[in-house]
Length: 226
Image (cartoon, rainbow, N blue to C red; front, side, top):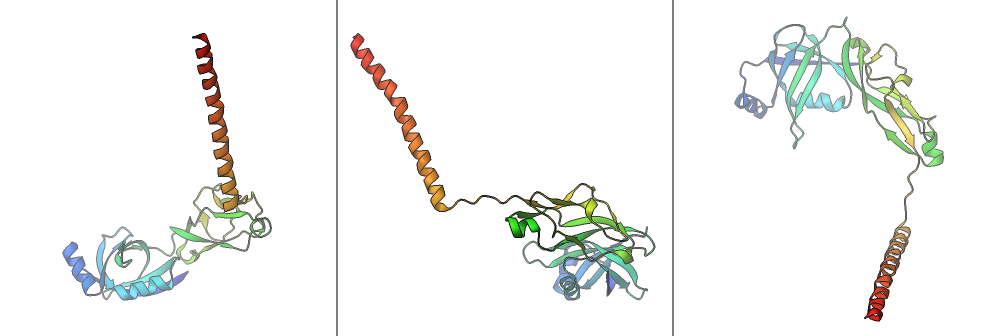
């Protein structure tokens, strides 16, 4: 687990106008929670935070957060608010953590190896779980969970119960499927699809003709009776 040192300053103002002004000055509004203390409003340099998130993209990391002149506290980012269009950070929530107490975190799942069923039999790999919730001490938080799929044949799957990871407790249901190899899907060529369409059209015409003949015969029978 990587550790990053950051500095922040307390923020006195609140509300949209204040946060807009902060962002225009290159500062990000944030809040520090946890350990039974009151929430603390903060501000940090946006560029520095975005650099850190690019560096550790997709993983968890511990932040030693120094607020004003106080000693750094161990934290995790609990929530990030991101602009839906620009993708820029809008707000962060930090959570104080205790090195001696387990915490719950979401860990990315990385599949390793090439499935036997995909490589030799044309199967389709289905990655069902991209992350998994675990409980562990802060120092034992893994960057990711690796799951080897090399032995998976067509019809095989790997479950949460199959994952071995030291010093963590998986909180997801043991029976949940992490990855599976499905049978290959039959892909029809354009020529085959056209031939099927012609056959269906011909069947439709034959059926229509078959329905029309009894009607004509009934009209002739009606003429005879008259």
